[in-house]
Length: 300
Image (cartoon, rainbow, N blue to C red):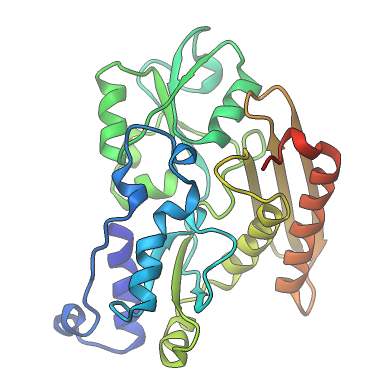
C-alpha cells in the first residue's frame, strides 16, 4: 500500500490534480493476493512468483481497476494476454540490507548462526558464501520479519533496502550488501505498473512516470532472468547500472545448495537503441549460463 500510494501521487501529478482530488479521481483498490496470504512456506511450494499477480491481473482484465502496482521483482517475465508493463517509476536503491542485532556484516556471524529468508536466491548466495550457516525459512511482512529478529528466533535476515526505506525503517539496517559480492534480485528496487494493452489513454498517462534509466537497467535484468527460465525454483541474481559511458551488467545463477555458481559480467557502451541493446545483453549472458549449467539450475 505504501508503494501504491507513491504511484497514486505521481499519477495525480501527471493529471495535474489538486491534492484534495487525488483520492476521488485516482482511488485505491486494495487487492489481497495469494502470495500475500501465504506466510508459512516458500512460494515455490504453492505455485511460484505468479501468486503475487494473479488477482491483480484478473481485476485489470475485468475492468475493476485501470492499473496495478507491483514490486518488479515479483512480476513474471511473461505477462497474461491483454496486459502490458506500462511503466517503471523511479528506481530506488536495489541493494539488499543485512538485518542483525548481533553482527555488523554476514562475515561477522559465527558458525552455526541461523539466518532466515524465504528467498531461494538469498539462501543459495548465503550458503555459497558461508556454508557453515544454518538457513531457515522466514516469511511474513517486513514488520513480522524484523520482530522475529528482535525476539531472537533468527540471528539475521536480509531485506530489500528499498522496501525498508519506503516504510521508514532504514534505521534497522546493520549494513548494506555489496551488489557485486551478492547481486540482488532482477528488478529489485523498482516498481512496475501494469495496464490493459488496449487502454491507450491509461498507458499514455503512465508514460509520464517512466524512469528511463531504471527501465533500461531492469530490461537487461529481466531479459537475463527470462533466458534462464527464471522462477522461484531457480536462484538467479542480476544487477545492471547505467552510467555516463554505458551499461554495466552482472548476473549469476546458483544451485539451490549454493555449491555451484555461474557468473557473467559485461559493460556495453551507450547506443541509439540502448534499451534494445540492454535486452540483447541480458538475454545473451543468460543463455550463456544456461548452456554451461544446463539442468543443474533449470528443471521442469
